Amino acid sequence: MEKTISRFKHRYCNIYDEEFAKLVPGSMWSSIDLLSIFQSTYNCSLKILLIYRNKTIVASLPLFYKTAFRIDYIFNPLQYYYYHISYYFAEKEKELRNRQMRNDIMSYIAILLGKDFRKLELKLSTATYDIRPFQIDKYLIKPLYTFILDTSVRDYNNNQLTHIRRAETFDLKITNDFHLDESLTILGNRFEQKGIWGNERAELYNALMEKISTRDYIKNYSVYHNSKLVAFRMVLLDSLNSVAYDWFTASNKFAMDNGINSYLLDYIIKDLEGMGIKKYDLCGANVPTVAKFKNDFGGELNIYFFIQKKIANFI
Image (cartoon, rainbow, N blue to C red; front, top):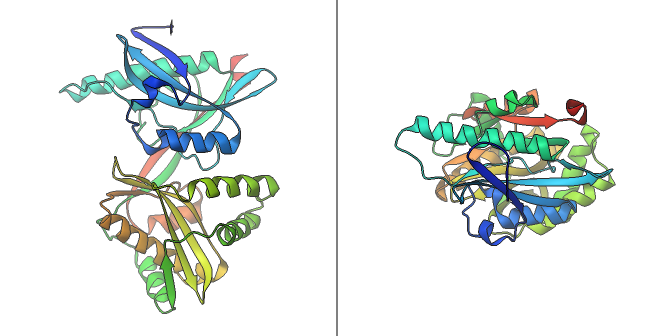
């Protein structure tokens, strides 16, 4: 264990470390099983940063990294939406003191990452709204956006209601089955239209979806029309925090032209409410057309931050 500044100490460990295994993750994004799936799929290294105060763990942060030219750099794997800082300190009665404690821990983390990694990029979760420590350390910071829906509220725009009514005129069947080949075909067609599909991405998504689709924290929703898959959504469940994340989604042209995406999203929102999930994070509203679609379901617009440090920043 080493000391760098202030009252904190730290160490790096792997996901099988005895101390880390005893911790309750602050988010599903920090769960050992999910982290191990990403590590194996991307064939990358993974460290857990543990922060101590008075020999007690007060925070943790998972870090995916690779090594190139003997330089370790942190990267943000595709579909790993949020790096989440988990806090474990006993909270005080005054929120001001808790906020200051989180700020101090984050300051410590910002200094460590800059010292130990010459290059990094990570998307901090929406829970990390105060990123002043990274600004002080001169990281490059870009705001990103997502909509988080309250599953008990149906505050849909008239445009979405029209789409849902149109979809209801078709003989649709929604199941919780997942068929990898069909889903990957729809996903591939969608990405090909954006010019970002290729063998490497196809193989990566195939491996990721195959490994994770049967986990109990994943719920699959598939829409069939005339026995053909036309749309699907794969949702990541964080039951501890009563949050669901819109993880994988794709549809064909028929579904997009006939309101089926709206119909499916409405179905999922109702299903999540029935499961006791209170919040549904739509995971991204940065492309204007996508943002418009998600905005029409109501919900709260949240900011999360893309933190980056390039090698040039150290020169």
